[in-house]
View 1 (cartoon, protein in one colour):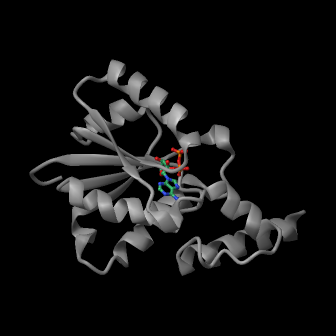
View 2 (cartoon, rainbow, N blue to C red):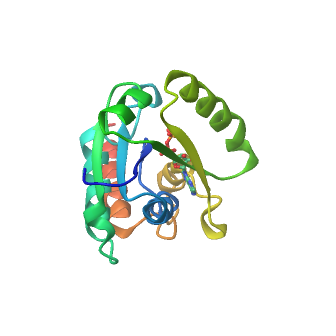
Length: 172
Ligand code: ADP
């Protein structure tokens, strides 16, 4: 993927939130090329399939106004993150940090990944003030109970989430 420093931003993105988009925007200032790795994460029983999540992220990246879209690639991955990072020749893994509660998990994961692959460095971007509290799992809960998720996710993601809930309602 071109020259320069390549970074991977991995996540489940179930669904993609404004918090994720903020990290994506800022990550493009830290690396020359950004690969957004959408994890299969079957253990989390995602609301959206891997294909849908990749589509959702691609759709939003295509809408980015500052032309950064050309330096961003969105890819699914089903293998170990550090192997995926090698595959795309990334030297940096980017993660977002929200509250203190994220810290322990992220710290352990970064340490494990450093052991597994010493060529790749984990870099944390602090969540910005207005996105601190946004988490995909709360977005799903709010939507499930009829709350408005418009301030947490991009409009197309809201549409997809409402459609999915309707489908789930129809089949239950
Ligand atoms: P994962 O299953 O890897 O935790 P997520 O999609 O929940 O996947 O999150 C992907 C990354 O984005 C993580 O580094 C997470 O800390 C970060 N992130 C999630 N929500 C926000 C937010 N509101 N602000 C900043 N970073 C966030």
